[in-house]
Length: 121
Image (cartoon, rainbow, N blue to C red; front, side, top):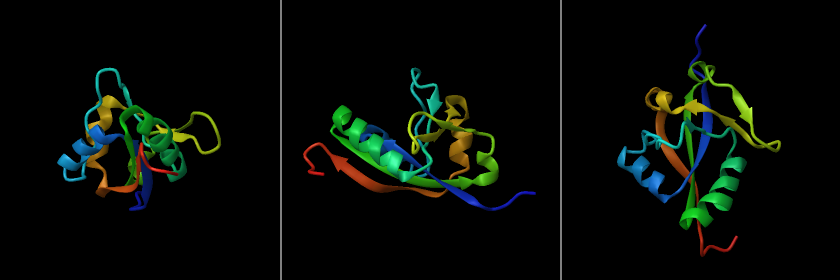
């Protein structure tokens, strides 16, 4: 039986990826680069904040947390992967499935947090 339940996911991004999301009308994540075989949204905002602040800011001067939802029935195809501590849960979406993943995003991709290199935390 199918349900209409939505699952909320988060994705930490840098300024270049955020610009591409904005250019899509906040509806799609950009295609992966050749050296990026997996798209990995994360399962909780705390983990997304950690990546955006601790990795994106030093790498590019700013980091952003995005939030979006997809139908639970569609997401069942991806197993949750734990990549470290208690909060470090991700979905691993093969790059070749990203367009179909994007097609299932319900509503818009929202920016929930912004971090900058000169910002005091």
